[in-house]
Amino acid sequence: MENQKSNSNLKAVIAILAVLLVGSLVYIFKMTSDAKALQTELTGTKSDKESVMKDLEELKARYDAAIAENTSMSDELIAEREKVVNLMSDLKKSKGDAASMAKYKSQYFTLETKMKSLMVENEALKKDNAKLTVQRDSTVTVLGESRKYNEVLVGQNQDLAKTVEVAQKLTVSNLKTAAYKLRSSGKQIETEKARKADVLKISFNINENKVAKQGDKTYYVQVIDSKNNVLGEKKTQSFGETSLTYSFETTVKYENKSVDVSQDLPGKNFEKGTYFVNVFDQGELVSKSSFSLK
Image (cartoon, rainbow, N blue to C red; front, side, top):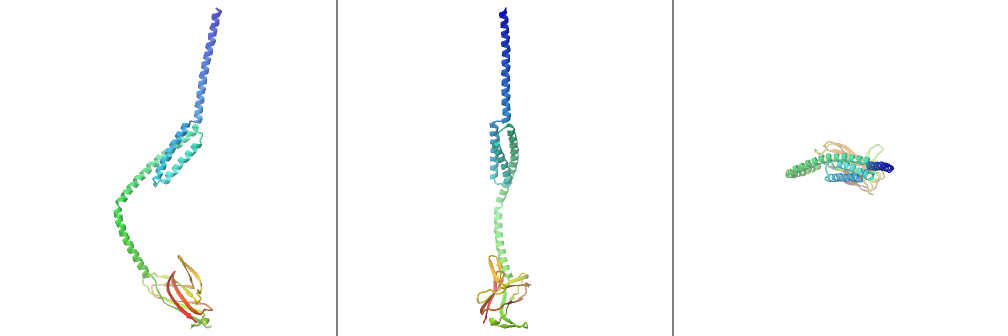
């Protein structure tokens, strides 16, 4: 009787231990599963990071291809591609946790949506360009004929312009130079002797031209003595790549009629010998003469 009671107690203890063992195993399994789930939530997975990186690389490749087509949207496409490149750089540096991966996936979807919109617009531009190319090609013959005609007209206009330019040029004549001695009374006495000369009088005529432009006209007069010295102001004026050192400049109001120009060039200790006088219109020599002093 006592043995049966002992056996019953032993079985009860074993049953209780079995229940506790099963409960412990269930608890350990649940804790392990929860820990793994928590770890996955905190760290994410390597495959998630690789997947997003792959999607970004494909997105960049599509932008590269679109940019290579060199449409009018190239600048906008380049700017969006730069955003993709920057996101790829950030993703490489990230730890790949779930929160970060969610952020990167969201940014990727935003960039992808923008890319699809740009691709639609880019395709529309390509179609428009294709239409324009067809239209352009269809008018090549007409434009070619028009171009030939225009070239003929341009040539004729250029010839006419040159003719008009030549016709409008003013000419200078009667360039004369004489030396004078100044009396105390102010009277000027012409002389050929260098030691007596106090002033050189240079005069010339601007001829009548009915088609020339009216307005102020400036001439530069250059007087060079027998020792190759420029007399007078000795100022230098540039005309494009050339320059001119002149004795004086004179400006007259031209109204398509003949104009007489005369100006004195004071001096002292004039050299004996031959003098050369040149008149320039801008940088162009339009008249020249020479005279001598004894």
